[in-house]
Length: 168
Image 1: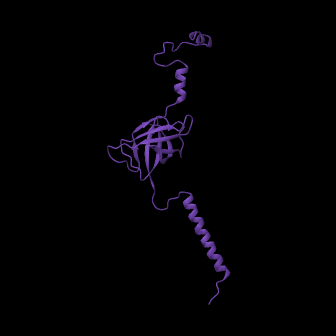
Image 2 (image 1 turned 180 degrees about the vertical axis):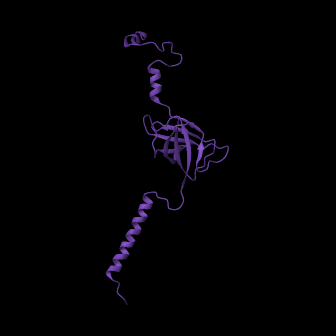
């Protein structure tokens, strides 16, 4: 019987190590070698304030994708959010995309209503129906400075003294 040299044994262990390292890199890095497990849809909003690349895309509270890229469409003066959606999620051409806030001051995410009538969206499809985020600062500012519909003092300058006089 032939003896196996130490160099051969070391070579086998190095080869096994390289294979394990390659496997771990691919699996931990979410690298797809053959095909993709997601498709892309395009949305346009008047603003994507607070939304970042990598933020989740949810449907009925379940994460179904992520924000892949944010761009500015200067011609139409709109913000474009490119979303990566899992292949097993079906969206229709009447789907609705909304930008929501997780909690009172939490991160932004895109919420999807899949629609149901019409045709299925394919890779690169566009969600036409969108709802931009509500800016809490604007709402508070309108109430604080009196520009609320039905407020007859809108535009009047108020001081602390006149405000306290109203409550007496």
